[in-house]
Each structure stands twice: as C-alpha cells, then as structure tokens.
Length: 315
Image (cartoon, rainbow, N blue to C red):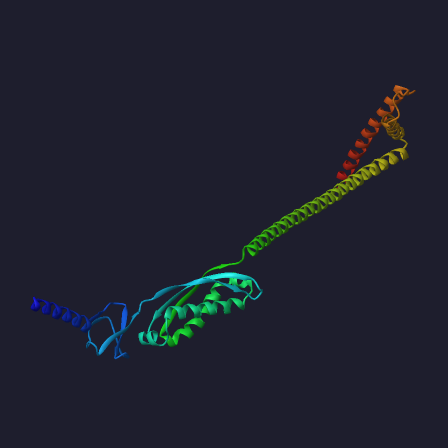
C-alpha cells in the first residue's frame, strides 16, 4: 500500500516537472521568460525547454491585431455643444517585452489615452465640424495615440469614431434648420422659375412687337408703292385726256365728266347716314358719257398704233 502511494506521488511530481520544463507557445503569441522574476528573453511560437524553479513564464502577449471598443463619453465642443462620442481602436503588439513591462494594464491605458485625446480633438472643433469632418478627427487621433503608445511596443493601425450623438433638443433644432433650408432653396428655385418665365414672356412679346412693326412697315411700303403706281397711272391718264382735249376731241370731256359723276355717286352711296337717295338724272346722259369713255380709249389705241407704224417706217 505504501509503495503504491509513493509511486503515485512520484508520478504526480514527474508530471508537474515535465509541465514546468516543456512549454509550447501557440502561434500568434509570444511569452516572456523570467529568471527568478527578472526578464531574460522572449519565447516565440514553438517548443521551449525551461528549468523548473530557475525559469518561469512571465507574460503571455497576444501578437495579433486586436480590437478594443472605446466606451461612450460626453464631450463639449468648441461652441459649447455637448455630444456623446464612442469609437473603436485597432492595435497590434510589436514588442512583447515593452508591452509587458513598460505599462501596467495595457488595455486600460490605451482606452484612457484615446478617450482623453477624443475630448481634446473634439473640444477644438465646433459642432458642425465635428459632425462633418469625421476623417480629420480619426486621422488626428491616430497620429497622437500612435506616437504616445510607441514606447509601449504598440502599433495603432486605425482609430474610428463610431457615433457622435448631439442632444435631443439640438437634433430637433437641426432638423428644423434643415427643413427651413430646404424650404428656402425651394422658394429660391420657384422664384427663379417665375423669373425665367417672365423673361421668356417678355422676350416673346418683344419679338412679336418687332415682327408686328416690321409687318406694318412692309404693309406701309406696299401701300405707298401702290399709291405711287396709282398716281402714275392717273397722271398718264390725265396727260392722255389733256392731249385729246387739245386736239378738240369731245370724248375727253365726257371722260372727265363720267369719272367725276361715278366718284360722286360712290361717295353718296357709301355715306353711313344716307338710307334713301332720289337721283334726278338722265340715263341716256350717263350712257353717253360711258360711250364717250369707250370712244376715247379706242381713239387712244388707234393713235398709239399709228405712232408705232410711223416709227417703224422711219427705221
């Protein structure tokens, strides 16, 4: 019985000795080796042999990139607006001994450093800048925090602001401001539309007036041309009648009498206040005048033909 107990004790002691002597560091980690509590070297991933009691494992450092949530906090901006901000940081341990022995409670140190710098960066901006310049905030935080954590053997790869929440009353005020701005732009666009419509209407009226004036000018020109031709015709007719009178042709006098007679009759018929007219005249006289006009036209035609014949013989 005593021999079996001794064997069991020896087996347990051997197992503990082997566990303290042979250590396996997993991939993605580095362990520090201490000699009587003093750091001596770093154990990389793989199998390592330690001397029990003389050598001990100090800190087991994760060398992979890690994600750390930054808790939300209230921050006062440059224009005294209170906003609630949270974020996330991505970092990686590059130097295991520094991360293990240069700072106590690494994660807490990183969080406090980031939260302090968030207050500093947002405190130098007004509310509009803090809401619109998220990339600038992230870049400034990354630069400052990475420089501060370098002595700890860390590399901060990214720092992202996840959310910036203004107070509820400020959100309502911003919503009203945005609504007023949209209504303002809508009113401006509507007024611009009315202005363009008025301009186009005025342009159309201007073009219409120009075209109308040009039409009236063309009509006046045509009317003047017509009057000019009528006057020329009247002058030729008068010249022909005068020549016939000088030659003693009685039909020329009848022509003038007939013309004046017809014109007077037209004026009497076209008067608006005349409804019934009594015309004491002889029908035979009117017919005689008209016959005289025809005779005058015929004699004028014969005279022109005789003149052409004389000119032709002279040639």
